[in-house]
Image 1 (cartoon, rainbow, N blue to C red):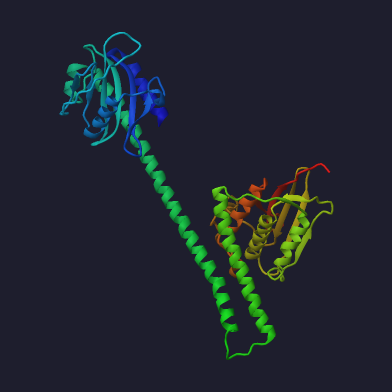
Image 2: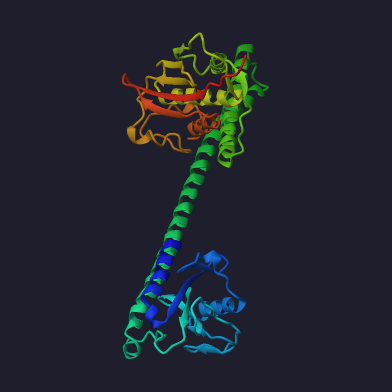
Amino acid sequence: LDRQLSIVSQAIVNVFSNEGVRDCAIFLPDKREKLVLQAGAYQAAKEIQLLPDEEKTAEAVMLQGHIVDLYDGSTLSQAGKNEAHRFKRVVTTKSPGRYYVRLIPLHVSRKVVGVVRLVIEDHSRCLSIERNVEEQERLNPQTAFFWTFLDQAAAVIERERLRRENLQVELLRRTDSLRSALLSSVSHDLRTPLSSIKAAASSLLQEDVQWDEETRRSFALAIERQTDRLNRLVGNLLDMSRIEGGALKPEKEWYPLDELIHDVLGHMQIALQSRDVRVSIPESLPPIELDYLQMDQVLTNLLENALRYTPPGTPIEIAVEKGDKEVMVSIADDGPGIPKVDQERIFDKFYRVMGTARRETSSMGTGLGLAVCRGLVEVHGGCIWAENRSSGGAVFRFTLPVTKVEG
């Protein structure tokens, strides 16, 4: 908008210099409805300094929609039905001669969207301030051409206003969509484990039933599993909030990546008990500087994603490859793969692949897990992506930088 209005301002000065126009600037209202300089013909808006009398006059023009001329000294010439005002204003330019300031409202229909400030040389060929066609032809044919420029400036301003309003509407729509997705996902995924915990705890508290030790243990394990599931859900929500706010900082320590992978497989043993998990890790893998808890969450989320979108009994493959400057971790499955249209969006928050069967009991399914993975990997200086395997299924890969230290 600044660029377009600067072009209009320069064109007005260049085209109508013979009619006495020596400078042009355009005011627009800000968010507080205070007029500010938006563009000038020869200077940046921030370099143009206005005296209080001009500011007050421009505000009156914006409010009343009438043209006002400010002359040297305290004489004010008016157009239309303006009430009388007196300001002391001395107009100066680099060229000799007498000049005055003309403040013109920019109209769109009946609405004033801005004010044009012209510095005009005081001679008989000045532009008419009348918009009446017959009056324009009688006084100066160039006047009609001049008003075309102003109408163009008003159209540019109104178009930009409508564009911003459309962007705001779209932002509110997307925000509402995200809020609905969050409430839908969280309410469903909180209710499911809470129902399981409630059922197991209520069973244990029944006094008229004597549970054997094995049954009591199964109830306790169910409570533990569902509590862990709730903890991961809340952790993903909190981490997503910290990632977007830039407040999530990894507390890195040197740790063997192979041990981290085996630790994750250990605490996911019950969920993975029906799967053939194949692990391929090179023997010469060096320790990696990482945040243990964050990378534990990345691996856990990726494995849960594989469990959710693949048929029971199919294998899951975990592989680590070492390069000169980074290590790459891959988690592959034999599921249906990722539709091509979804490959670019699966790491967006609350996004779920549609049309693919999910095992609701296997994981949270909020659409946050992969978004959190991307944030945690990137904050470690790595990258993450997904692709389909030629043999079928999908593979998720992420990299972590290898840091070399002396000794």
